[in-house]
Amino acid sequence: MRTIWGLLILLPIAAAVGAQNPVIPPLPSQNAGSVYICPMDPDVRSNNPGTCARCGMALVAGLPDPVEYHLHLDVSPKPMKMGQPENLTFEVHDPWKDRPVTNFQVVHE
Image 1 (cartoon, rainbow, N blue to C red):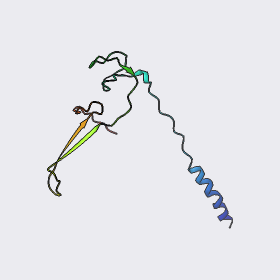
Image 2 (cartoon, helix red, strand yellow):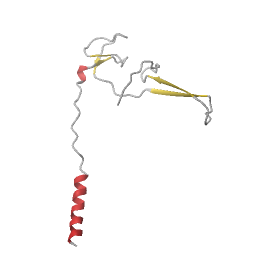
Image 3 (cartoon, helix red, strand yellow):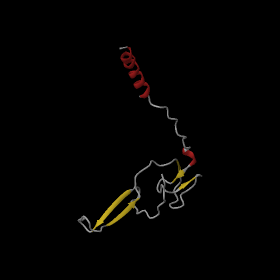
Image 4 (cartoon, rainbow, N blue to C red):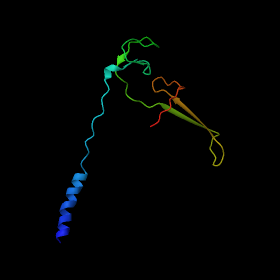
């Protein structure tokens, strides 16, 4: 009986301790003033203030918010048939001017 009472007391304590969120140290913040971008061409960046080499606008401090690129998938022939070869065409467009992306970088995560 004593063992059961001991377990009934220890079980909620162990659950409460295990449910606590671990303290996660904050990520080192990047100095927003150390990167300058063009408001019209966000892919143009510099470590120093100045003007955009593409459009001539003044560069502003800070990084843009992350955005997703547009992806278009085309399948041929339509409709797809099981067991038959298909052609998949992927087109990636930038989110700001909807221009096709042609320069890709390999990223390993």
